[in-house]
Length: 452
Image (cartoon, rainbow, N blue to C red; front, side, top):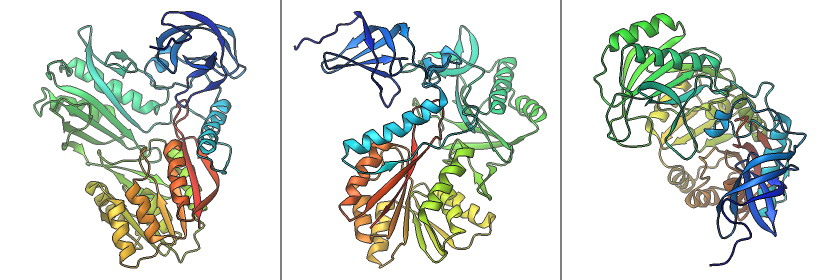
């Protein structure tokens, strides 16, 4: 086996040159990359090697010899240990530059000549998340809520989650204390026993409506009526309280079956002047303030004049489709999740929007059929999951050839790959606009418009 320039447990002094997309410092030892947890570009650190592979090594910083001017005091060690806020030690303006730089680097690697604009950030880059999925486990014999340490299933007790709406944190603690009071056992992964697995809380940013979902291993929960009564009395914002059954050995949080214990089986919130109903299994962006910024960028990029046909290829509960419908002649939404399509139709009627239609299906199959039927789209809106566009979908775009593609991306690596694939059909992009949807984390969202 080829010898590596460093070995496990070795300590050496290095200078950090860059940050990886995961927010780790990058140093080089004779050209060999060393990824150092917690270190920032420009810093001189003592690094302790934790793992040495053939082509790179991992290390942790044991001493900071020269600090970066962009270093700030982290809020709490727990946010780094759990991966809740991996960039908390980096000043917020530098976080925004880091995200812009990440997109630029990936475009350069893909040989794409596209201007990346400065990242649009938040005035208050914390307390923004409108959704929490909190594991519940027994720790030292006590029912505890918190978060798992990175790459493990060790629960770290936490009460303040820093990036979550503080009202959600309060609701989680209220549920936790009631579960303790009534001695409801937490779930045990080892033997699939116990009752409470997760507490899922959503809160409407504009509506202030609260939804709580208790994810349980069984329908039979002792003192359930008492818990419901106390929660409804203590939380005036509570609009929906549900029990979700998940009795499988799985890492998936929510099961397929849900029962309503109080209020509705949805909550409502507003986005760009429209009202949306959100059910427990629906996807809804977790940073409502920045979602308005992101969607407004997408609408502006589409440059709608009012006579266009728009296809929204990953339409979910209709958030982008219905925001665009106000500016277009007709919007067609495609979504693979039937419940989301149902929600989208309800949301269209809730907002008296008559020029938006929604169909269930795989975007690539529906688009191919529409292209064969002679449908032409002026604008194709795509907001795919992290894995980006399927090759079959890109082929469907090549058949339909919409005048413009507006690509909302949550993964710059797959975005760069997909832009390169769309260039084969004569599309080009001039600029990309990153939007910081997840401050304190390494996630990057952006909007790119491609024209023929």
